[in-house]
Amino acid sequence: MSPPPPRRSRSRLRPWIVPARKLRAMVRAGELGLIVIAAAIGVLAGLAVTGMSLAAQGMHELIFRLPDGERLSGTEFIPSHIALLAPIVGGALLGVLLFASARWRKRVAVDPIEANALHGGRMSLTDSLLVALQNLISNGFGASVGLEAGYTQISSGIASRVGLAFEMRRGDMRTLVGCGAAAAIATAFNAPLTGAFYAFELIIGTYSIATLTPVVVAALCGTFTARLIVGRAFLIDVGSLGAVVDADYAAAFGLGVVCAGFGILVMQGVTLVESLARRSVVPPALRPLIGGAAVGALALVSPQVLSAGHGALHLNLDTAAAPAALLALILLKSVASAISIGSGFRGGLFFASLFLGALIGKLYAALAPFLFHTATLTPVVYAIVGMSALAVAIIGGPLTMTFLALELTGDFPITVLVLVAVVASSVTVRKTFGYSFATWRFHLRGENIRSAHDVGWIRTLTVGQMMRRDPRIVRDDTTVAMLRRKFPLGSGQRVVVVDQAERYAGIVLIPEAFDAALDQAAEATRLDTLLHYRDQALTPEMNAKEAMAVFDRTESEALAVVDGSAAKRVIGLLTESHTLRRYSEELDRRRREVSGEI
Image 1: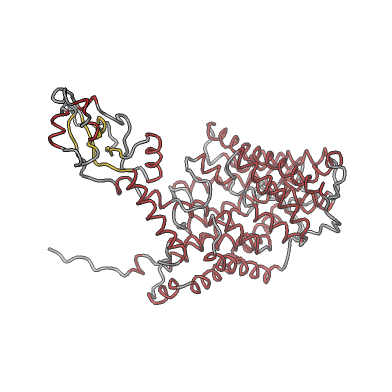
Image 2: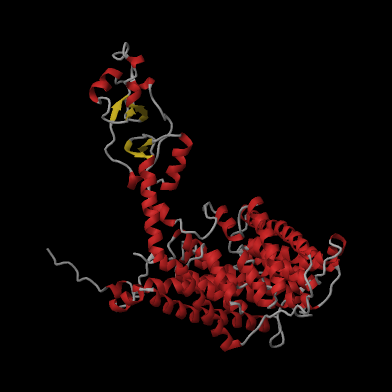
């Protein structure tokens, strides 16, 4: 017999693992190591986001022939043939990339929310780079999408890879992914508090003392890195606000409700376009080309629909516009964003929601004097409030958007008005629709994810792992008397019954078999007359949460586990009490991991 092949070193098998065991142990040992890694992630995210932003601006200037530093959506004139053709060329290029990547990468890329909810913070850096490239092509050629999705994807992908290199625990991995996303958003908006709370609310799913320092450090490092390269940008001057009166809060509340309704329409519109695209005969690789043609046609009406909308936002904040013009631009931008995402362009609705919210706020300002006679807010203030309220409706994160308004304006009275509006918007969406844009798309894919709370471990706690593999089984032609002799009263609570073909038939409760009313006919009475839960059983692949739902629905204390095939062969038994105990033990262990006790 030939000798076994020599074992290769761990670092050669998995080259992303830091080779020094002592260094890995030092980083994992305490909070300080996690903070140092978070700072490094913040710097890397700041560099990645700044690089993507400069690359996108360079593409806009080159493709659309813009003067240096001018924003695409804020330019006054773009040659018609360029405005029409650029998104088409971008769609064709993206289609080629999608076709190639579909053959090369069979799996769907995991985004930061899904990674933290289901995969313990594990993301593919290769997939993240591919998503960022697709996002850059989409935005660079003028599709009506923002770069924030690419920013968070690449930054969180880097953070996840760093966590894997140091073999971090599941809880720390989730925190690092949040650090990457925090640094990305903080860098993008020059707003570290916004980035930190984006991570807490949308990526990690909770706020805790253990996650506070690394997330804030990452956000600050990302922000300072960008400031060293490009300086400060994107501050909004709202002028003098004056005293805030009671009617202003009522007006802000009403604007929040309006933005919630519009946000739901936008999310449904994107879903409708995607549904129409899937039902069409057009191959996925050709859909961006067609979508690009539609976006280009809309750009002929107004260049402000192109790209994310940074320039258009500043343009509309600084100038007055008639209500009809505002309404037209709202419709154009909404349709352009829905077509862009629905046809396959990569990107998100983060900045589009800010831009559209600002437009809705200014349109609302034209009606507010008739509804709130004593309100003192200016159109620019309404735009800031609407910007945050619509972003909450679509993206989520009430505190994230409140801090965004604070850091963009530096005005505390406006921040309080924004808080009123975002609470109204968030509650309205949650009670009427129930999803943010990201979690709504997960729902359409069949994933039951409503936030970034870690539910992935629940899927690994399966019925097959928890069940007893030696259930008491009898045939359905067994009589009550035979059962009494085989299983005396007190020997157990239940037996599983199978039919002549060994298929699951139901469960008999032993105390019921000893009912005095059966004494006279015990020798003649078959067990099939005492069966419970004839059509209710568990399968081994069910997780703990699904099993508990079956227990609740059937109001049973125990259920048989069958193999799931047509034969319905009994392979085990699971009780509700044992499921609850195992679930609680696992939940406590996960909480201790997060708090650093393990």
